[in-house]
Image (cartoon, rainbow, N blue to C red; front, side, top):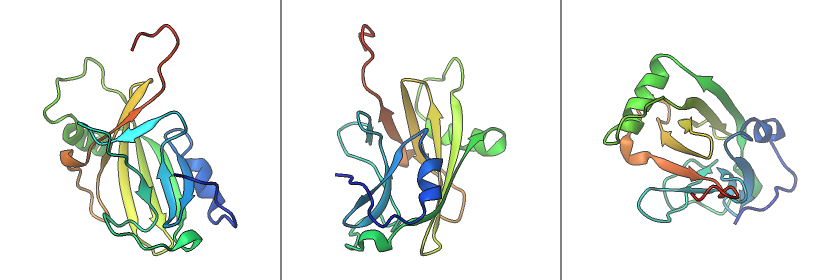
Length: 156
């Protein structure tokens, strides 16, 4: 469960990710995660996804506010990087009639570790994909869904 960060560090970073998610605190440090009412999950089941400032895949240490982001940069994406990320994301899916808007998120932790993600925004939902720590390489196995709340009368 996310909680507000006390004694916040890197406030400039928190505002940069608002379009796609939010920054909050856990006993393990800062994380980038879903907005309230949204779910970030791996496909095929409810497996919550969040991006920890510790940038570890498992067994995070309880570091509190000492693990934080020093930079989070989100840019609209186009060109070769977008095409490579989209190809990895779309592998095994039916082709989109119109490609979604793409966003590149680059996060740097206090430890100096860097991470790149891409998001593909369809409006009422989106997809994300991890594209490397240091080296740019998107893996379809790292895709995750961003699901928003139902809109009244939307039936979806």
